Length: 154
Image 1: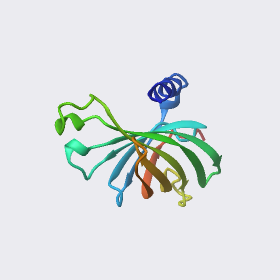
Image 2 (image 1 turned 90 degrees about the horizontal axis):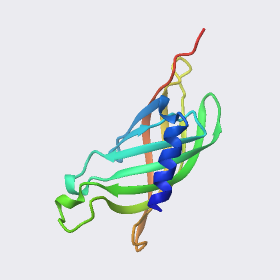
Image 3 (image 1 turned 45 degrees about the vertical axis):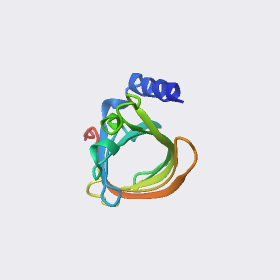
Image 4 (image 1 turned 60 degrees about the vertical axis):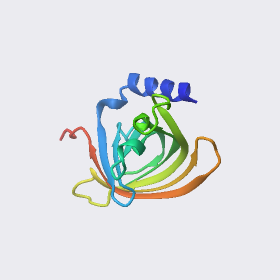
């Protein structure tokens, strides 16, 4: 599974996906998000918890596929891997990078303001399961996103 995500990151990086980005904040989930160019059919979203102790700070890597895109709405889905790069603070016997679990993401980004389509609202459904597959939770996320896009030529 880890090899798949490393290969996917390589493919994203070599296809010019990192040319533009978006930044988002999901206040009720306490997540800060940085994405590659979401205008591409395949893009990567990374998320960091902002309301956690350092030892339980997690990083989500979410390769996403755009299902449908219009000027106002973008539907997307994908899988995810949650890593905990700082878990060794709490447990010195832990691996350098601990895999906490896996997720499936399905969401929509809407750009309701005609004057500025770079400001978007994101709504997601995010089933998550622990790495041992013993427990899971159904999460939802609502946030605001700003898309840093190239300026259109007039």
